[in-house]
Amino acid sequence: MSAKILIVEDEPAIQELLAFNVTQAGFIALRAGDAEEAWQQIRDHAPDMILLDWMLPSTSGVVLAKQLRSEAQTRDIPIIMLTARGDERDKILGLESGADDYITKPFSPRELMARIRAVMRRHIPTLANDSVAGGGLELSPDSHRVTAQGQAIELGPTEFRLLHFFMTHAERVYSRTQLLDQVWGTQVFVEERTVDVHIRRLRAALEVTGLDGLIQTVRGSGYRFSTNCP
Ligand code: CA
Image (cartoon, rainbow, N blue to C red; front, side):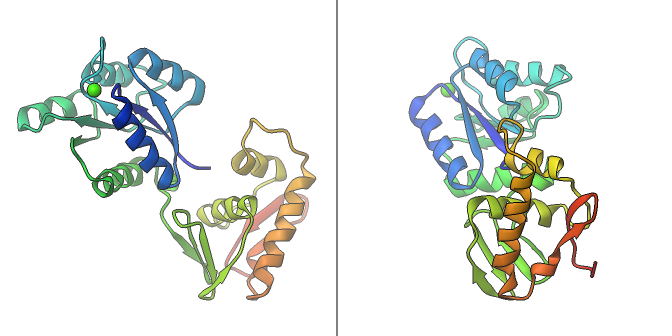
């Protein structure tokens, strides 16, 4: 599943720009215009990372960062502070408030995404949307491309998510219920045999390159992605 990034920014144009870049990079953008809305989004959607503007109406970004760090449920969410201030003293103050990194406005989308990925790699490596490779397959979440033995293959969105999950969790067996939770999400109701349908489609897509054996059935347990022979 894609990482959810909460953007806490009161200026609509900047909020829009941030949401656009975050979405383009394959993440889910959540938005809040102040601390109160931020808490609401955190309660409702449990974001994986927070982009936090320093200058917010009423509660400032620095105060909000401190609050987030003091609560058990939000203590470990990585925070990147955004600000127009560029001097060293403010940078130190921002990092002391609990931010993991700091970016000064105006920033380029490239710089922003590089910071997001760096912080994400450190804290939640499985959500960083890095390309993954294994067993002759290469999958790039950014461009939604998969190659098998160097040859591009077409996958539907569910097969793509399923393969991404398998490749980032190789060699472990997952039951159908676990796969539904991880790949489809807990919000949707789908029957367990739906998993089998998509596994079949995934294998069929890989079959042309002879890599369908990477998706293995483990009798009585479920499925696994393995580069070893079953
Ligand atoms: Ca602001």
